[in-house]
Length: 102
Image (cartoon, rainbow, N blue to C red; front, side):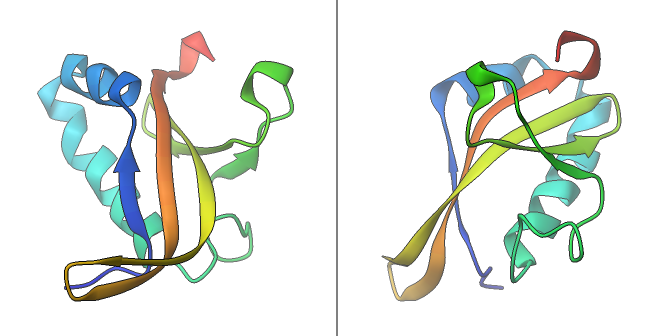
């Protein structure tokens, strides 16, 4: 199955995902798949539980709820071709943080 957006996970986000409890990973991955399949992953009309972050340290990032965790991501629009698949752009996961730390 090809998604509409190419997923890129930063090294910081990867380290945070690696430290997550295994019981929370399934929900996290289902939320990522929801974002990757969306026509507009930054549209509150299409994706539930998202919010544009306003704090200066999070400028340009969006937040998606995933249980007690928050996926902080941004979009880079523009065609991306990976192997034989064409994507609308990149969905870059910058961080995955516990809700109490945000």
